[in-house]
Length: 225
Ligand SMILES: [Zn+2]
Image: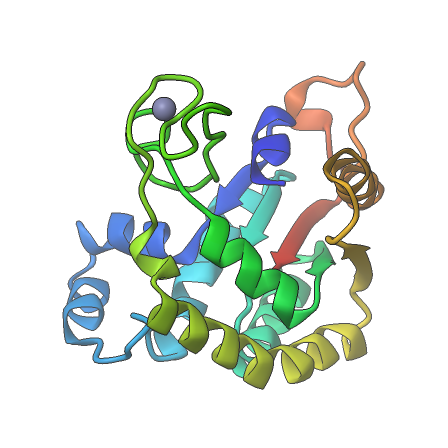
């Protein structure tokens, strides 16, 4: 989803990466990152909401498309986001990639990344057919993300299940267009369904220059573990 968004001139917002970027010039954010005692590294709601406001002001308020990956994560974050969208006159939408818990756990257990092809370790690597522990593209030994270690993954899933229903309810009640995509379907079908949802929320007219892509401001969120 993020790759597609970037190819379509959209910005991708990842809270943790944005927080580290802002911490270089914002001492409050830097101190919140250092002080966080949360086992998953989550920041108190006040910090993400300020950062999201900053990202919306910077990227979405001039007619751009901002894809927020795995955000909002709590009902409070969702309420704050809805208020900010309204204040800025942004049009928003939600794409939920849904799968049963057993599928999510299995995916996390199987997921390996390549530190050479993908230094930020965002995407699952394609393993070699004859040597599944190595990257098919460059031959480097694949590794598991720290976030996917079994105890951390169980905590992430637990938190997602605790907050997701209420977070979705806040977004749906606000009138945002919500698409649920079955993420257990075969990959080509899943990509087609996610793209179709993305296009319906952020249509691009090829003959328009980049600044003219979106007459309304748009915001998208893509919720998954
Ligand atoms: Zn590689």
